[in-house]
View 1 (cartoon, rainbow, N blue to C red):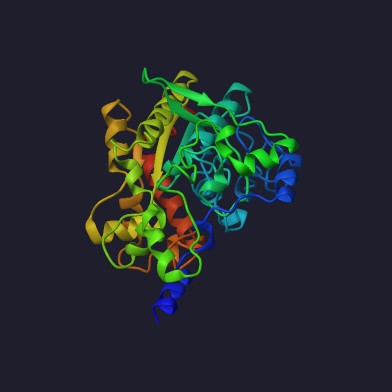
View 2 (view 1 turned 30 degrees about the horizontal axis):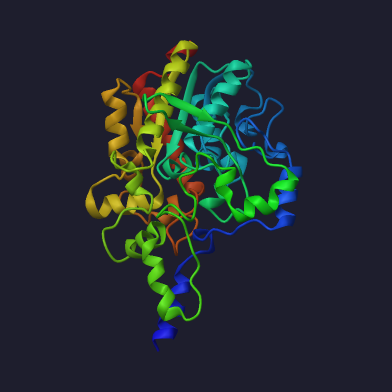
Length: 369
């Protein structure tokens, strides 16, 4: 009976919570793919306009951009057609072109580097620039391999680290060659020199349980993501990555994320742009707030304000105000079972409304006149 109960527990744990090392075939295919050694990866070309931003039907006849968006899949509007992505809806509402440079899977670090690339190469001409930080992206900011977080065999990326002096330093992507497969599979730390999520070192790493399940199931509770996610449904436990917003966390994820956003704000202003920072909650963040009236990422917002960045906006309360007592997953999650996934068509519409209201309230489009 105990074996059956413990085995049944496996059905509540999605595969992407476990790390799967790449096979040799996957490793070689990855190295032969179109890797961007500056930022990691870029969107599929068929999803982009000739200028490099996501296709947006509402902006096709508009020659000059007024806003540029940077961020991850929530910025891109993943899982919805281009016409329903919030960037396109914002274009229609504002009557000016919103260039969406969101890229699926990006951390805050990659989004910032993507902004720098576009600015330095004269590709982004918008006077207003918005960098969106999804709450979960804080964990992406402390890894060099996206596959250590999600069910992706191999997806390398750069990351930033804090020097002892407090300065922010960029660690470029690790350069791998086909001959490195055996060594990488044997010990990733030879190549990932600034990796916090190495399975042998971090409580955020994952390990599958196996027979006899009654003995190995307790290992689940030594891994923070699985432990916190399982308890999320029964108790007032925040999302699995919430601990990273603790200033005392040994990863320094909060301080790294803060400094990335501070650099973005400074560089955008030096370029003559008006910067905005949108902090976007996940569906679980919204559920957790409804239970406890607390946001797991409040410490980040407070730090930014302490450094004089007051145009960092928590979109959580604004999104909740739009749905009132409605079903959150109707708007903010594509997987009702785990309360996860991207925003739906309705969620993108609400996000566009909230973005428009914030921009209008802050006078963010004044520089376009």
